[in-house]
Image (cartoon, rainbow, N blue to C red; front, side, top):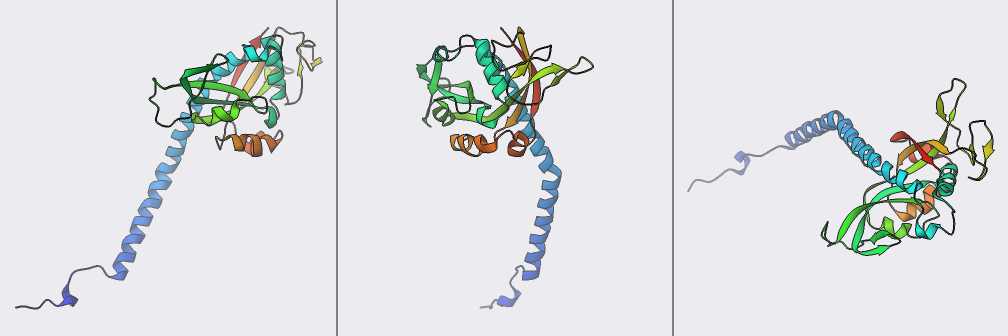
Length: 240
């Protein structure tokens, strides 16, 4: 019987193995350098589309007075004035997101959050938009447990005329001003029929109630420092 010399068996030397790993690392680095920015751009574009679709939910919320809000505001315009003028602070900013709504439970005209993980879309739950004000919504924690997709923070800045007559966002602060430049701290002292404003949409980095009530709410008025640059901006308006 012929003996097999183990020294003649095929295999990779340590040097060959290290060389192969180096080649793979170079290829991966090149791949990430080429396709990484494209992937990031795709994710950003998807986020912008999601935020854009939620903008209509924001418009509807500012023009609607829910049953449980009638004790706080006399009209939807009163509510819109307070939300717009107060949104310059992260502790009073607006949160927008989609959530899984329980088809078998309705609370205050909205589907209650569906917390289960085994439900059937369209049967057990429906995807619903939610617009809530930080620090003012009792159901925010429960809704955020049923979030579907990304969440967004909105800062609203009143549009005012500059020296050339163009509409530009006013400096963020409490209260609004009318066309004559008079300040108003409530809807009663605001003598205009329309509030024109620019809504700035920021991506919420952590879609959790703990983050919203913790680091986010403690960010003061530093939106860019806390959330980065806004994804996009949209000019909107509410009417009395």
